[in-house]
Amino acid sequence: MSSASDYCPAYAPFLGFAGAGSAMILSAFGAAYGTAKAGVGISGIGQFRPDLMMKALIPVVMAGIIAVYGLVVAVLTANSLPPTNYSAFTGYVHLASGLATGFSGIAAGYAIGIVGDACVRGYMYQPKLFVGMVLILIFAEVLGLYGLIISLILNTKANNNCQ
Amino acid sequence: MALYGSTYAGYGFGTLVTVVIAYGILDLIVNGRWFNIAYLIETPSPYFWASMGIGLCIGLSVIGAAWGILLTGVSIVGAAVKTPRIRTKNLISIIFCEVVAIYGLIVAIVFSSKLSNAIPVSGWSREALYAGYAMFWAGLTVGMANLACGVCVGVVGSSCALADAADPQLFVKVLVIEIFGSIIGLFGLIVGLLMTGRVTPFK
Image 1: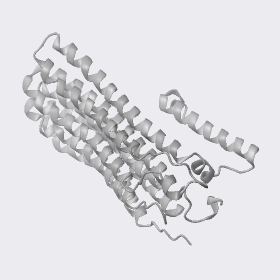
Image 2: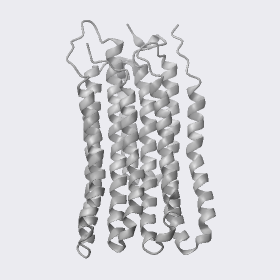
Image 3: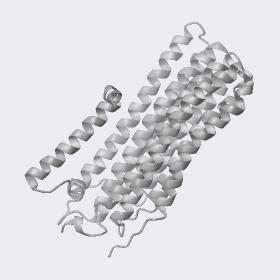
Image 4: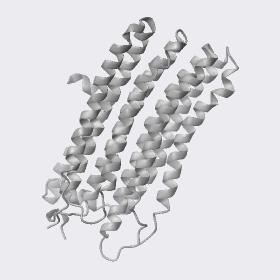
């Protein structure tokens, strides 16, 4: 009863759950780093220019969006993981989609954190930097979005044909 | 590439790769097969997977909460030396970190209610293996997300205490950042509970 020779082996859900889990875990690390790093910068500028603090919250919001990307992929994957009729192909596809979002999320979160921290400190001295800050943050955010796009494309390829 | 070996992540990743390759070679020598994933994943009983998941869930969540509390608490008492008025208000940051541990506790209790002692007659059923994998990954997800969340809330809470000591009206604005940080743990909780939604207790 070797499981290795059938198309819907019993170990396939392990791979699917690994995909959902890694999407959420790695995005959470990216978002946490981004929020913490940018948060330290924002509280720092608050002592000198408290009026700029509301606009300076943008990096924190964008880091939160990275966590939402991970949540979306994890929920999508976990909802299409039945106990039976789940092929190894679908398992590997879900693993790939989870890793795609996860690693992109970590990278985007790191970028948003470091850029956000530096940009809000500059924004404190020169309020005209706001537009430049938002543009750079958008480019960093879009990296996470690329991972999400690939995950969604991969998710549509799931095929549970057990014959 | 030389730089990678000199960080914790580099050492950890290098060790992982070495262990995986060593396992593969040993398996090849002893059993004559190269890295059979089915054997690696299906042989440990689902109780192993489920129990590891529950243990990691509560363990990692508590590490995250503790790390956050240590980061925040030090800053609160340090800043309160000169401005004692911040003591009581900034306990909110500590409570945000504690809540992360509570998420892990809730999920661990929910999962342990799905663990029941059932001896298999002939091999494990697919549902039982599925339950084991689900609980492992859900527990790991909740634990790791809470770890990240706890450290994040701790760092921001520390900045919150210092900002509050400088200017009392900054407290609420930095608290908004902490709230953004704590939703990460909540997302982990949601995903963990969703993953085990279709899991039935072992029969």
